[in-house]
Length: 173
Image 1 (cartoon, helix red, strand yellow):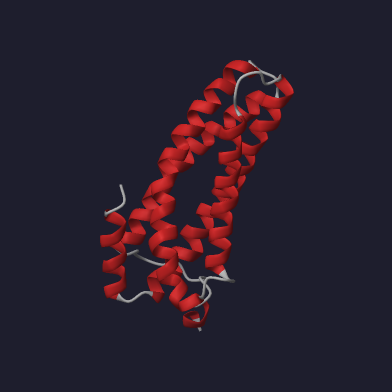
Image 2: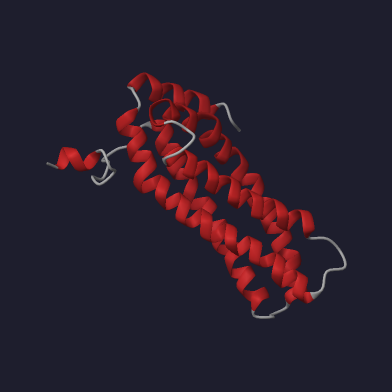
């Protein structure tokens, strides 16, 4: 009976292939950055040194975006299309993953695009909320990838496809 559950991601995967393992191993550093961003948003929300924390938030969000972009490209440009051959891309897990990427990156982009000079404290608090929303989306998103999507890909992709995945994600710096 446990074989039936594995098709739904219910059975833990013992070992991920090199490419999937790399994608998973990129998450802790991104999550650590996200925690720092989230903590800054809380400080801003609570009115603690808003201008200083907001200036720091702008820098840290830009740094996070630079780290997130190649990771996203590895997934959106390589893993998702490979899985999409089997699952489709217009609905289902891949469509959900891409939507979450778009949502989080949209919040980050809007934050960076609107974070300029002449903002009021209320503007800063409002813009910090965008970063907070990206935090919630991405922390849940990474969990879905690690617990459902990556194990699903491990079962779904052939050994040749796993090698191709690893080779192609290594090309993205």
